Image (cartoon, rainbow over all chains, first blue to last red; front, side, top):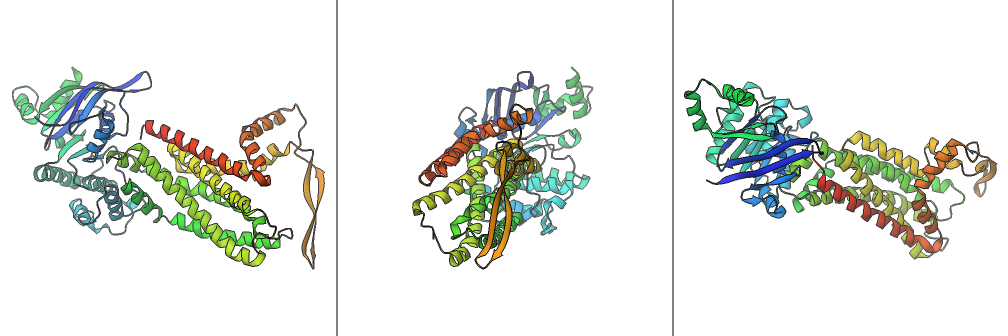
Length: 245
Length: 280
């Protein structure tokens, strides 16, 4: 099987005492929607930050599209194929949604601005005109963050709690957008979320993380089979049971 | 790198505060022209040309944090790294943009000051060696570039816009001794100070006479405040020695060299620190 991300005994320490990731292993299959599930402070965001290069790792190794983390240039090249919205979306608050997307296109070295309107339409922000992003609602900001992540047609999109702060309609739109992009453009998603009910509607694979360690990886199909043959009825029950073991 | 530079410059040229500072600098230089005209001791435009640096340092203290810290506060720095740019390139691009914005502000000053100034006062009436004049100007410009690089470095460490602006302005006030408490610190060294005694309007222009008075800020040796003042003064001594030595006619190259070395050190340290920084 082809993996987009593979990690081998990743460790991340803050100072000498605070260990956030402890020998963390993960395998994200190509073309999957990988749900990363864990309690607050388990290490999900730290893992995403390391993959994106915004935090250096302490030890261990990961590979991104086959490029090893020890090969700095290769992994940087591989990062050109990813997009991420980690914690809060990134954009310039004093600019309009369109200007922010133009900035993103410029950063990505895309000469033409064609496709920006299409992206704005996709996330329902086409009619925002010159309204500055700082005046957007939280949901609109989240949707703009996703539009920014989609710019440049990445092969992997990392979304940290994307459904937070979205209104119910926004959650449905986001879910449908993710499913469509995954199916039509074969984009791999790594999504962390606490809204397990929503995650269970889109994820093809799961990784459960506890105290900085990945304690289980399972496909959605295997999980479904497990759930039907056990006392657990939902993903939530399964997660709680795993965390309490 | 081209994408980064295009993005950073695109943002700079869309910044309203940048244009406001350019316009204020341009008209500020006009005002300085008026002051030059009012000063009877000025015989050529070069006499007061050095006055520009205080205002520009103040503007750089506002401009650079507004530009650089925004990248951190809104998470765009994270975005730039995530899409595959190396940290060294991200640092270099925002530094180049910051320095360019500073140089454009300096250019706005010269554009406002020189065309009228030279027409009114003439160029180099005192017949200073042209090489010294050029080096003198270069010295000031490189010093402002060093200051820009310094603030840029602080921005990558502190990332809070308002805090960096306040810190930078305080530094400028301290360094240029315009700040009243700093007068206390710097004033300790002489028992007397020179003050204006009289200003007379004559047919030849304004005639100013000076007198020596007792320095009210003078502190006796051995007092705690004098010890503290001396410590602060000592902090700036290496730079001051080089600068003072460069004030002599044949030493301006030392001033330029000193500021270039300071700039290189700041950029090297800043880049190394940024390469290891955990981005929030």
